[in-house]
Length: 197
Image (cartoon, rainbow, N blue to C red; front, side, top):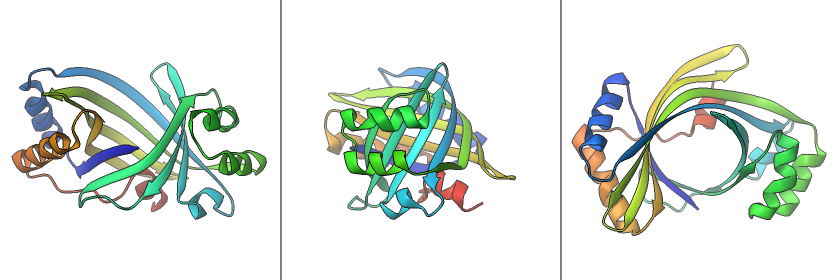
């Protein structure tokens, strides 16, 4: 289960978040160029199942991911069942995802249907691992572009994702960050914002 907080940002806020993170003990940062393509059938098979299917290039690595929506979350937090595997193509990913926990039937339905790219997101992520006591989370500072057809829109946001440890500590870290930078919640995923273009 992926658990994350997502906030709106601009370049100044991203810089302030980086300073906040770098002042904490145990922070480790890396930069990842991410090129994501999202897929569905013409009649919206995956959307009907409240699922998202993505193939993303992460620097030198190609990863296929399926997310299933979960709406029972605290305000400001998003939670999804998330399944992913290394894959060179979307068909390769659909063949491998069930072994990583994704629904076999949904993967088979998607694999047997004509899939099309619905939208894309191209961005650079500064990913910072943070640790407090026994709790580890990843702070992601994302800046790039949302695209759908010929339309595009800038992307700039902050995410804080739970990795391991105590969930209460994770929520406390999120509250501390949001209060420190006066952050505004971003209620929509990258996919949802791209599909609105």
